[in-house]
Image (cartoon, rainbow, N blue to C red; front, side, top):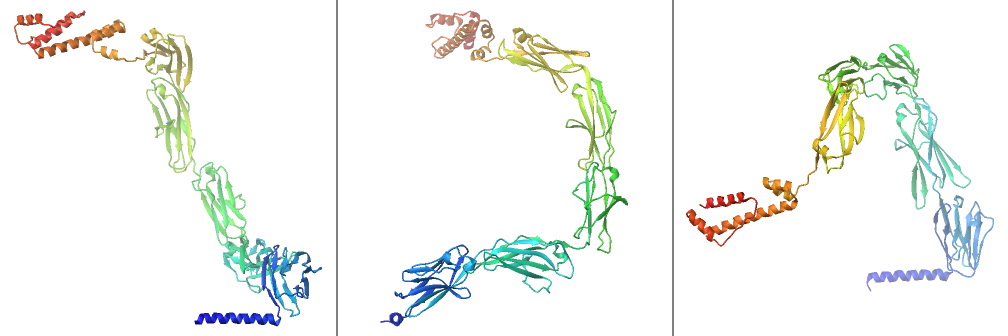
Length: 608
């Protein structure tokens, strides 16, 4: 037997001997949990294990309320809950002697003792019940205003957390750094804590922070954290809301500026001048304009729709009587302006067609400025002079002189004049019009300039007519059916007023659709005339004849190459004899004998 096996055997024998001694001696053992943790309103189970059990064993549960009080017992099969205790309605004892408590309350946090009575002895075991309840979210409230620099401490704020168990702890923070917990009221910074036990057994805790703050604490952020226990030795925390001290302190500096103004001030703007100090609260302020009193309110001086006369030296003085020296600041306000545009002559003009027109524009402003004559978006002049030579109807309309100060956005002035052009009517050149076929409807538009209003006359007349105005143009619209006369001679539009008249012709033409026959005919004047004078059947017959003639010429050429025709260099008699004796007879039946003879003679001449 090795050493390990021997050791295990010895240990087992020792344990068996101990058990035998306990049983044989008649001792009773009680086993309980030293501590049971439970959340408020939950159920708690407190086990009690008794060994060995005999018929005469009695198990009893006690609590300590200053005196030992029994709450339940078990003897044999009999199990009872004692009446008149704080737990009577919420406990029961199980078969294994486990004590169960329902809807646990903070007041249930007691020591529970399991007592065994047996002829062999009366042992017991005690369980400590621990109850937990998370508190409500902490709330931080501020106190009244505090004056910086005074020798006594002032209340900064109070932190409160309600209904926690066991007792929560409050920790103060300034700028995210914890403050040491100080209870001594002789210190500059200390805390005063209070605890209130509610009827439910839960605890409400408040803590007030006292300090002697300085001016540097005006931007400090304060909050509190509540720390509370939970089952399993856990410590959890919750943070309150953040606050800043309502701190009063004297002024050292004064600030005076144009409020929300990033651009130069111009006439018509609303100007707000803001005066403030680095103290709290803000002192009263006094405003002056070039030494004379100006009306302001709550540190603001507001000038509505400023004029150039509002340009001046403005001064703000802080009336803080806690300081020994005056606090004041000055602003030099400049107001930019531009005078109304002056146009010479200041009236609109009516000129005859071909004459000239001119205007002069002048502007005065506080800074360098520009002058432009414009028609629509087109810039016509940048020197203040507008001159139009040989006026046409296209020159009629509105002209605007615009003056502006580029360095001051939005600062501008403008004036406008109108040019009216009189004269005989002028018609815009018409575009060619195509129609599908005779009888189709066509719409023609005759566009003309003219002042005074011109009269329109169409030839041919009739159809549907209307007159509209587009800008400075008159538009007469005619809709009628196409006739052969219109296609040959066009449609005439005549426009007339007291200064004269203008006339134009709208050419009309049919839309042509090309064909292969027309292509073939286009190169031959004879065939073209035939095609124009006859029917399509005649045209086809002529084309076939031309093709046959070409084939015949080609055949004759091939025969001569193969010496089947005596077309070699012989005298004319032989040639004629050969032609007579030839087995090939060609009969040409056409009205163009001269043309065919010419082709044959040309062929023979070439061969000769």
